[in-house]
Length: 196
Image 1 (tube, rainbow, N blue to C red):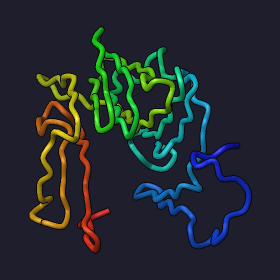
Image 2: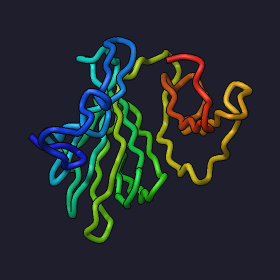
Image 3: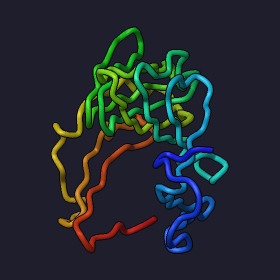
């Protein structure tokens, strides 16, 4: 077994740094709890599953370290499953609907449920780290989501629910065709979120 942070064996302060999972509510997973998995379709990648239906989530999300020439060329999601990729660091080529999207740090791509996402590393032999998400789409008659791409570096931070200490960046349009939202919340020291 291997871990995302490559630590093995006993940890110092093991009981102080354990992950906490409250099924159907939340999961706080420490770096020592991020296990690398073998997932079909991911070549030359370290894949860590963060959330899944086994934990009570209605989605699956991953941290993916894409090595050298790694990626997913067989297709991710589609067939009623929408997907989203965010580049934590590095550079990838992402593909959907016959189009290529070059994503660098902070770059993201939302792919609607009728399309598949594929990607490969394009970081000159260096690793790239991705946040990858998929969720079954809940259709609403007369509405169809479209591909959305951008970079968080071009999205203004705004006060979240009037709290100046909590800032939000919305990555998807606030439109009814999208049955979910993806955003980044930034907290000043001492700030908190109103709900789990």
